[in-house]
Image (tube, rainbow, N blue to C red; front, side):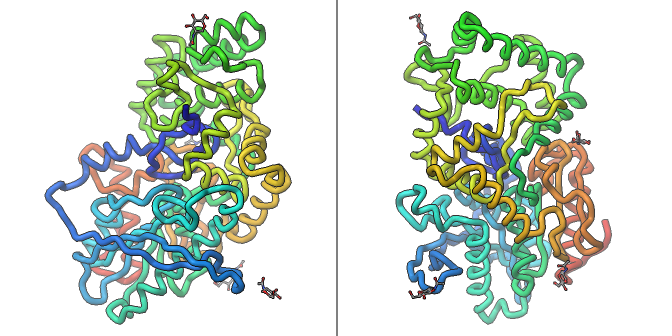
Length: 481
Ligand SMILES: *[C@@H]1O[C@H](CO)[C@@H](O)[C@H](O)[C@H]1NC(C)=O
Ligand SMILES: *[C@@H]1O[C@H](CO)[C@@H](O)[C@H](O)[C@H]1NC(C)=O
Ligand SMILES: *[C@@H]1O[C@H](CO)[C@@H](O)[C@H](O)[C@H]1NC(C)=O
Ligand SMILES: *[C@@H]1O[C@H](CO)[C@@H](O)[C@H](O)[C@H]1NC(C)=O
C-alpha cells in the first residue's frame, strides 16, 4: 500500500508524482509530460550527453573526505564560440532531459548560440550520496550544499578554455527557482544572470495563504455557485466527523478502508488534506478551464473525488479502498526516496505547511501545523520538532534574504493563479531585479516554449524574460518587446 501521494507538495515544476498534500510544490508530472509532448519536435534528435561529477559530501567541513557522484546533462550542438552557458537547475525530483529539448532556456540557447546544461540535485534522481535514505544519511541534504554542488559544476565547466569568455545564466522553477536566485546571490562571480520562476523564496512555517489563493481562484474563475458548493460539501464532511454514525456513513460513501480509524485526529486531517488537494492541484497547475471543470464535477455530484491514479497513492488497488491512516502513510513514505528527501527539506529549511488556519477559504479548519510537526518527528525522530523547524526557517530567511534577496540581473516570474506566488517576489527588488506577474498563469508556465493556444500575456512575458537575459549578458539582438 502506498500513501506517500499525499505526502509532499513542494515546488517541483515537474515531478513524477502527483502528491499534493503535506508540502506541496511537487506535482504535476502527468500534466507536464502531456504539455511537453505537444511542444516537442519529435524529429529533433540532439546529442544529449549524460555526465557525472565528483562532489564532496560536505562542502563546508574540510575534515569530511567522502565524495559522491552528481549527474548532469549537456547539449552543445547549438553552441558557437563565445556563446553563453545556460544551466537549468533541477529541484526536488529526477532530472529530465526535456528541458534541453524545449522550453525558454532552449529557445534562448537557440537565439544566442548557447551551450546547455542541466544539473540534478543531491539526494534526488540518480544523484544520491547514499544508497539508503534515512535520518542519518540525510544530514548532508540542504539547499546550501546543493548550491555549492552547482557552483562546483559551473567552476568545472568554466575551466574549459572554450568557455573562458562565456556568460553564465541559471534557470529554475519552483524550489529550483529559489536555487537560481540564490546562486546569483552567493556566487555572483560565477553566475551572470538568472530566471527564477514561481519561486517561494520566503520560508514560512504556517503557509495558510496558499489556500486563500486557491479559494480566490475558485471564486473568481469557477462557475457560478462553485464556491458555495465547496463550502457546503466541506461543511458536510466536517459534520459527519462529529458522530460515530456520521463517520460510518462517511467511510461507506468515500470508500475508506474498514480498518482505518477515522476518529483519530491525524487521520481526519489527512482526509481533509486529500480532499483539498484536488483544488490545490487545479489552482497550482491548472487553468481557468480546468478550474471550471472541477466546479462542474462538485456541483453535479456534491462530493470531491479523490485521485486514484498515481504511483504513490492513498488508494489501495488490493483492497479497493482509501487508507487515511497517517502512521501507515509515514511508514510507506520511507520507501519513496524523493518524498523522504523533500519532506526533510521542509522540516529542516522551509516549512511551507499548507494549513486551513485562514478564515478566507472554504475547506473548513481541519488541517493544522501539528500534522506537519508530527510528520517531521515521526519520520525523522523526536529532535525534528517545532523548535527545530522554526530555527531552520529563520536560518534560511537570514541566509537568503527572504522576499528581499540582495541580487541583480535576476527576473522573478510568478503566475497569479499559482498560490505559491504568495511566498514569491512580486515587486521589483530593484531596476536590475524586476518582478513579473503573469495574469491567469499557473506554476512555472513561463519556462515552457510558446504554444499556439497560450494566452498572449504568457507569450509576452516570455519575450520580456528573454529580452532581459539577453540584455544582461549582452548577447545577440535584444530590444524591448
Ligand atoms: C577537524 O578535525 C580537527 C581534529 O579532530 C578538529 O580540531 C577540527 O575542529 C575539525 N574541523 C572541523 C571543521 O570540524
Ligand atoms: C491572493 O490572495 C490575496 C489575499 O487573499 C489577494 O490579495 C490576492 O489578490 C490574491 N491573488 C489573486 C491572484 O487572486
Ligand atoms: C467493509 O465491511 C463491510 C461489512 O463487513 C463490507 O460489506 C464492505 O465491503 C467493507 N468495505 C471495504 C471497503 O472493505
Ligand atoms: C548588497 O550587495 C552589495 C554587493 O553585492 C553590497 O555592497 C551591499 O552592501 C549589499 N546590501 C545589503 C543590504 O546587504
